[in-house]
Length: 145
Image (cartoon, rainbow, N blue to C red):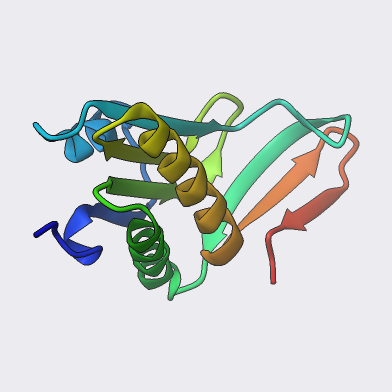
């Protein structure tokens, strides 16, 4: 019998420090998994064709619970995968790691599909908001729902 979805979620976290892609990837590795796919989301130097001067992420108090829900939902949709995800909150600079998601599975297609589903589900359902300030001084909030 395969482990239930909650038992296959190894990490679902919101944290102020930079997440380690290596540590998140290591969590999902297992002898029965022949593939691990890791997504690392980085702060880029532009958005909407404008230079980004500053960026910060803020999370709702329920964000960590919602992250766990998102991971469990994805685990339930992908039999046999092992998942981990962490999203950073704080002031970030260009090139900083903002989010890491990893999926391990017996085969590469399963791992790729699950990792894409995981990051898409996290971005769509976890209440983490990005505040970015552009070089010209105007700003915007992204993800506020």
